[in-house]
Image 1 (cartoon, one colour):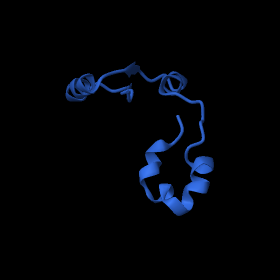
Image 2: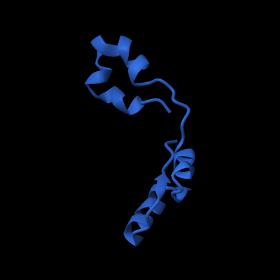
Image 3: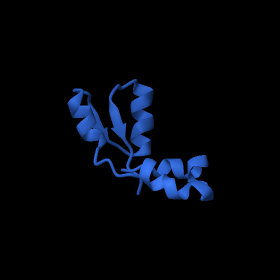
Length: 68
């Protein structure tokens, strides 16, 4: 919830760190379950193994793999 994925890109460079939190790491309070519900999409929280199985089966939906 907040853009940490961008920390490894140029936006996370030492000389830009003062701007990173404001523009890329700001918590937005959104989650994938709420997004799926808003668009009436199927949603499921899965493991990476589940995700592979679902992809092979061609199952459409929004699948979230939590990072632990």
